[in-house]
Image (cartoon, rainbow, N blue to C red; front, side, top):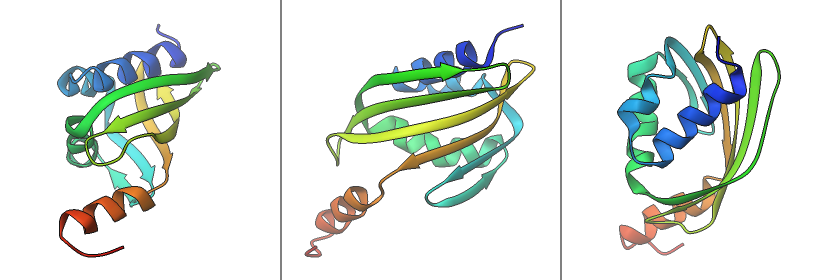
Length: 123
């Protein structure tokens, strides 16, 4: 059986490598994701949430990765089309080789400002 850190790193490598379909092979059907936007439940809802972000990703640098027998913690910097240098972290729970829960932490403020600027709204 794959340990949680190996699963988390495989998932991270896939989505940051622009292969979101491969990333989803590491996600349980009944996944729960807690993110700044709120709770997301189920693999299809998670795909709808995370898929668009993976498409605007330019690059990602993994800063740290730790794991135990049930969980993994990843911290990374991302460079996206609208926002450069957007650090994030994910706390992942893994069961039977699949990610069942993610808690994603990132600052939404620069993304909100970029969205408003793209609409011509001063920030």
